[in-house]
Length: 89
Image (cartoon, rainbow, N blue to C red; front, side):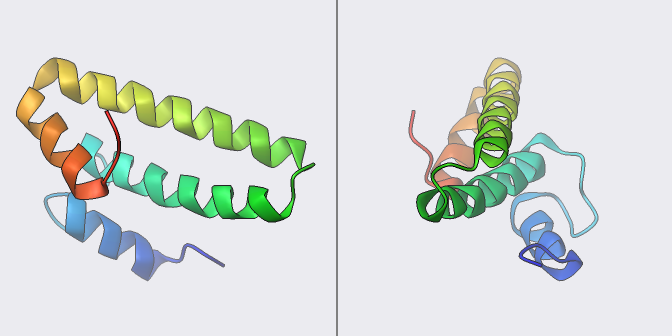
């Protein structure tokens, strides 16, 4: 499997407050970004996989909603997470 519990703990440890911080917006955005990059690679090889394309679109929307939330609450946290993950905008 591409995403096991050790990888999740690593992502939460790097972007959240601790390894068990699964609920903060930063850790969720980082997890979504990891999943989006994995699905993007899958879509390059399997162009006609409509269910994966729909899942990818939904994930991008969820990440965008969380980014908008963080931007609304604290602009500095938003800028930090954008720079850490290398996202545009």
